[in-house]
Length: 371
Image 1 (spheres, rainbow, N blue to C red):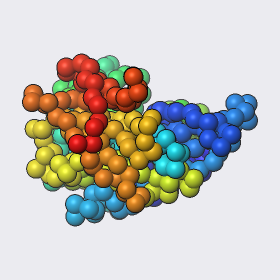
Image 2: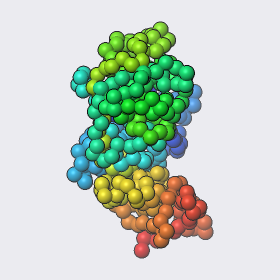
Image 3: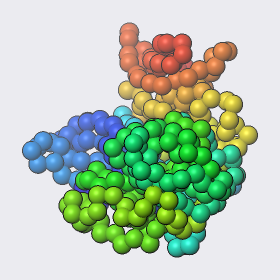
C-alpha cells in the first residue's frame, strides 16, 4: 500500500507495521494498523485473501501539538498503537516518542539534509548543541577491517553499515581516537540501500544514523544507483579508501517534545485534534522527570466519548471527546511515581474497570467515576 507513504517532511522515513486491531464495522472486518512513520491505516480484511485499502492518516506539518506550545517543528511520526471508539465514529492514535529532542543533520557542502537519528545508548547531543566537522571515511569499522587513522580532534567518522554490530563500529572509532562523532550509513541489500533506520548502539561518542546509502556516497562525491543497490549489482562497499576526507557535516539538537495522542475522523482519517500532558512540550521537563510520552490508548466499552491512556511517568490519563476535541477529565500518578505501559478495559458486575501495567510496580486497577 504505497499510498500510505508521506512525501514531506523528509524525516518520516521509518515505515513499518507496529500494531493492529480488527473490528466489524458496517458489515466489514476493518483492520486498523499503526504504521509508525506511515501513520494509521484502515484496511478491509473481510476476505483475508483479498485485502483492500480504505484510508490512512497523515502527520500534520508543522507538528500541531508542538505548535500549541509555541514550537515550529516537523512531526516526529511514530504511530505506535490505535483504537476505534465504541461507536466507530473516531480513531484515537498514540504516538510513542521516548526522545524529546530531535536531530537536524546536514551535508554542508551539498546543502542537503541527512536522514539520521541519534543512537539509542551513545552520548547525546546536549539540548541546542551542534557538532560540525570534516567527514572522514572510516570503513566498516569492524574488528580486523582496514580503518582510517586517528582524526584531528574535529573530524566526524563516517562508517558503513554491515558485517558487525553498530556498537563494535563505534568502539573501534573510539579506540582510534580523534573523532567528535560517528555517522553510519546503510549497506547493500533489499533491507538496506536508501532505507534509513534507528540504531540500538552503545558508546561514549555521539553517533548518528542509519542514513540512506546514497547520502553516504554523496558525502564522498561518489555516484550512486539505488536500483542497482537493491538488485545487488552496485558496489558492495563505498569505493574510496579509509582515511579519505569528504564533505563537511553538521548535526544539531532541538527540542520537539514527547509522544502524544491524535483524534481522527474514522471515515476519512482526517485529524481533528491532538492531546498531550502539559509537561510533554515544556523543555523544563525534558530530562529528570521520566518518560513523558503516551504509550497506549484503550477506548471505553461503555461510552463512545471516553478513552484511557497509559502515559509512562505521566501516569494514567482519561479524556473525553467533546465537539471533536480530546479533553482531559481524569488523571492518576501514585505517590512514588508511575511508569505505565499497557492499558486495557474490562467489565465486571456491570462496572467498567481499567487495568494498567506499571513497569516498576505491576498491576493497577481503576474505576473512572467522573467525580
